[in-house]
Image 1 (spheres, rainbow, N blue to C red):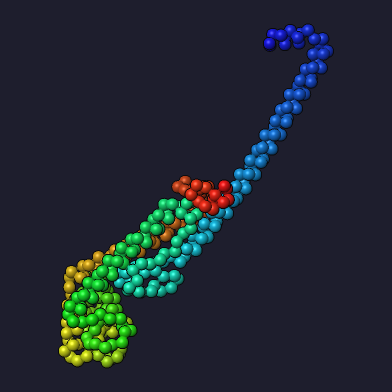
Image 2: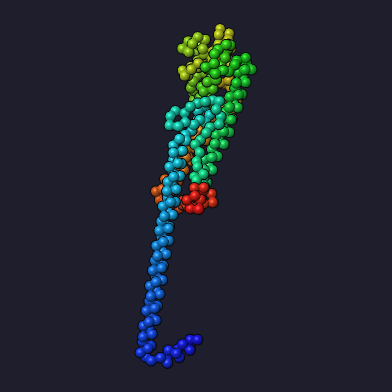
Length: 300
């Protein structure tokens, strides 16, 4: 085929060869120019498409960022006498009968794009629940001890009909006392060696020295008052109870530290992703259309 074309070309008059050569060159130049224009057009379309996709992806991240930061700003926990409690922007509220706590939850989008962080955060709820269950079980044990001694444990706001009774807020100073004793403090606070009968909170109320937040017990008559003091002092000096309480206090403190660490890591990851968009060497924000419902909606 090539040989035939060569013979045909040689048979042509030189003038015709020049004309045809020019036409061929012009045609080739036109083809190349058209191809280049097409490539530039396709490249431009692809670039604009990628830029639009990148813009949608960044807006999607911003939605997740704002939602997660809002949730984290409301997610605060604290240890109070061995119990893990939550609070939002103020003073932690102590509710001794509340075992389960509700931490603000993240969206499906956060879970899809930050699965490891979401898992660590979610696991804390179960860890906190186990700690608070242990706390409540120990309170039940103390309550049973008082009742075995003929002393009821009642809420401080409950109308008094019997004597003697111990108020349920006695567990606050007890946990404080046990915690400080376990640290080897020579003068642990408050001082269960001194239980006084004073009228600051009404007649016949017993108060632990150094703890003026409220009365610990109510007992009418010297006999009931003395017996109440002996039972309270006895449980305060019980080493087994002290060890159990200190174990829960230590666990609660560690959980609170772990929570602050995980919360800080999540905030850092979100901030770094925003600052070094689309992320860092350790994490890059990508389309997750198989896991993220919002990604399916935007990019599907």
